[in-house]
Image (cartoon, rainbow, N blue to C red; front, side):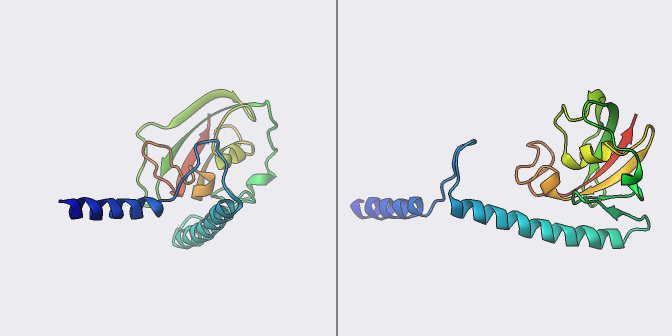
Length: 169
């Protein structure tokens, strides 16, 4: 019995020594951890860009890369006048995975919100600044601009690129 207890204790101690610790939310990471995280994000983004470009190449519809690192199906979107912070916009959007599966039954809808004064996905906010009333667009968004390494804690897992179909109301 003593042997089993001793062996079990040694195994548990050995496992505990190899366990990586994570700082609490708002905590600090070491320089090595920050570098590792940055390299992981950079590699993931490069991989997703290749996968999204392959997906785009297989589609009938054309998509155009935007400077913020997402694609949109509206040619020359940035030629539209840009809305400024404080301008009011109403919109809705649906989110899909790259298999075309709709992730939420009802669209996310925001009425009369001021640009620059609300929390939104970066790609969605960027597209909203250039879309005109009643205009629709499809955005192809890498995970880093979507819900990143954490997901949305509901239906979107970590590191998931999204297709977002957005409409100005």
